[in-house]
Figure 1: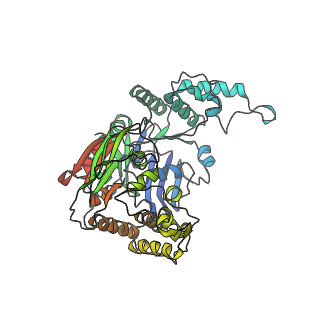
Figure 2: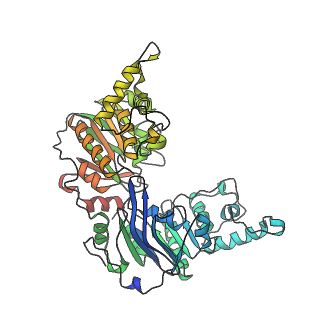
Figure 3: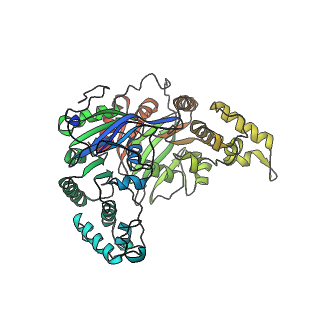
Amino acid sequence: MLKHSDTIVPSEGSTTQTAVLALDGITKTFPGVKALSEVSLRLIPGQVTALVGENGAGKSTVVKILTGIYQPDGGTILVNGKPTVFAAPQAAADSGVTAIHQETVLFDELSVAENIFLGHAPRGAFGLINRKAMTERAGDILAGVGARIDPDHKLKDLGIANKHLVAIARALSIDARVVIMDEPTAALSHKEIEELYELVENLKAQGKAILFISHKFDEIFRIADNYTVFRDGQLISDGAITDVTETELVKMMVGRDVSQIFPTRTPTPGDTVLTVAGYCHPTEFEDIGFTLRQGEILGFYGLVGAGRSEFMQALFGITRPSAGTVKVDGAAAQITSPADAVDHGIVYVPEDRGTQGAILDLPIFQNVTLPSLGRISGKGFLKLAEEFKLARDYTQRLDLRAASLDTHVGNLSGGNQQKVVIAKWLATRPKVIILDEPTKGVDIGSKAAVHEFMAELAAQGLAIIMVSSELPEILGMSDRVIVMREGRMVAELSGTDLQPETLVRHAAGI
């Protein structure tokens, strides 16, 4: 077992037990990003393996490879020791691999039984669906997971917890040998979580191999037999859960030196430019409040489902809060739409630049100038020369690489697309810029350029909010960090308190 090192040391037991499903040397690359680098994973019948890693470690990519959604670029998938190719999700299902996702797509207008057997319902004469058999089998599966639900009921009549049980029953409606549980307790109450633990024990007793993905360490140490740690797309360690502590797992997850790779900054915060108090949303976040000063970079850190992006979207006017106030330069600001936010000097660079941040079919210069058309038009006509000048000024400041400003944004790399989105909002001359995962999916060189430019903007007095799931980025760029968990602020850290283990402990509720 690995302890405080980057050397991969598989557990002794892992070499002697037969895996029903294994990954050997799996590599997966996306444009500009190596998501997985020669990782291995072994799932043992009758045992739970916890897959642990911070956001971006490669867990979701592994799940998609195991379920046939992605094809690996290298390495081997082994089923009972034999090399196998999951060319499509159906191939994975035929091999007995099923997944219970945090957000499984179900259909409210269909019955419970129809949802469970959608796409693989039992058939009778002439290939017609045998509804009686479907209902009976659905009832058996539901009973097996401890769900007292009528298979004939419409899904829309069920509560959230029972819908989750239907999703579990759907996953188990195939003859599964491997069950993948991806954040399965996110929407469950304490009682329902206890019932899920019982289900896991039943599945183990049936000889199922279970891959359990969770950010909650209490869950991992409660039900897991083995652990596997991923970091930056690499296998860091695996072993028996009894041979490791929470502290050791945290160190494995975050054990990177973040010094020397971020721009050196000497923050000199100015006046308070933004004050948020009592911001609430009925389902996403509660009681968010903080201040932000000129020239400051305020980081927001949290794990999946923490509510960070949802809060930022409300602050930008995309969604409506149920309560709370905002002040800009000490004056109350009523923000009910993105246009209101921009008018008050608040702009938002979203995480999903492809669908929310840029219009990929338009050229660079039109994307950059879109929110600033009032400044470059007169008497209802655009001034093309001024439009090009505005776009050129801001894209040059970000060192955007493109053949010309006429190049369509969809033809740019991920890093350059991100620069276009940032340039677009900087051209509005904001007071506050919100950067939601500003370097997600971009290459190392582009990350460095974005970080350098963020440092320059802060030095010029722009107030920056940065949402990031990458600990090195949070630690390397932030002056202060607010940690969120389950929609609430759980810590505000600065100075010597900004340590990776401290952030992860707060985010995971350890």
